[in-house]
Length: 146
Image (cartoon, rainbow, N blue to C red; front, side):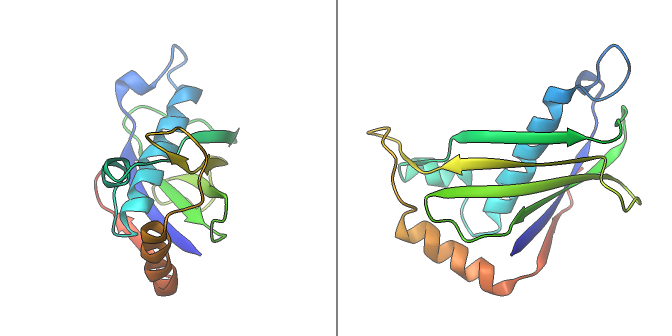
């Protein structure tokens, strides 16, 4: 399993008329965490795209347990729990800083797509090798940007 913790500060623009984080913003927080998780493999999304690999979302789920508010610092834990074959599933939990229970839990599923042909492909060797290297470390990485 690979785990990464990204810090996200709730911006005023992230909140709705009720003063809580809009549900759509949670998916953006998932995206931030996913991008940073993949970066821990030694590659970035932009590098993958330059090499002709796209990772479109084919499924996403979020369970909202408690609201988040403007200016709160949230910790978004992303986890890759299974080594990818045809798809990549990443699980997420969002916590308030200094709290142990998640306020949101969810996941996203991605497929591997050739950027030029837009056809489904297996994960490329360079991606698998980068992932294997990180997988064997089996530790928590933390992004300090908040």
